[in-house]
Length: 81
Length: 231
Image (cartoon, rainbow over all chains, first blue to last red; front, side):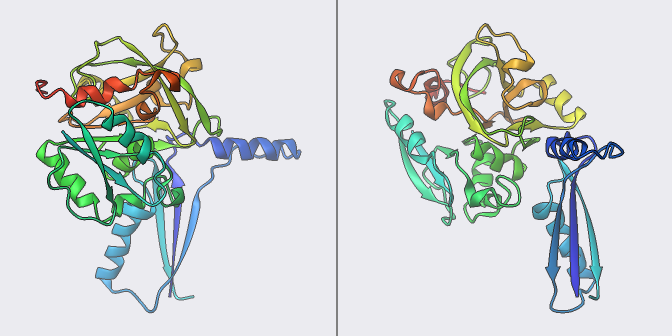
């Protein structure tokens, strides 16, 4: 089992890193790129399936450690492979 | 007055803080390793600057779960003074002891220079020896110091006088040029609603002697020693 956590800056928070990357993309000539936001992906290996309590705990961990809800949103996906 | 300077792995301004405090009459500072779990006997806690846990994940995000942090939280709840400087400010925000968050500087550069700070309120245990409107020259040194909070939080901070310091020009004028990191409303330091927890990105610990370029930072520690001040 695998869990994937995607952490992205909230839409309301300025992401200067994303702007810098977008500007670099423009300098490579791809004007169609309108915006880029840079976040993080965390890949988590699990020893087995999580029960409801385990999944809830993982959400708590996402909320308290893996992301900062003041500035970021997270998405948690749990999959078999 | 006994200060605890809490050392996390990667703290690097612990000695600056201890030296600043020990130089003041009636004050002494001891180091407390982050693996400790008690702060009994200390009147004030200092979370110094540095790069705790290599700034992994987010600045302060891992230090926030250090074994000493429940004691810091308890001390704050008891009304003891807690000051977080630079990385210490980031840790206090991550721990939810202060509102908002510190994110990557707007221009992406690490900024290390003197800043001018306007004291927005003297009604805190950390600025009671200043007057509102005083200008302090204190350096910053950080890559992630852009103060960010949602609109409601900002309104609340302003309404309650919790914005303690703002970056300004030398004449006290708030301007984009005076803002080293793109902080919302030029905010350099905030306190909690109870006013006993304070965080700031500039380093008062690096501005306590004239030969360091400024001694304006000393007033922050001197204010903390003013036991006659009642919040």
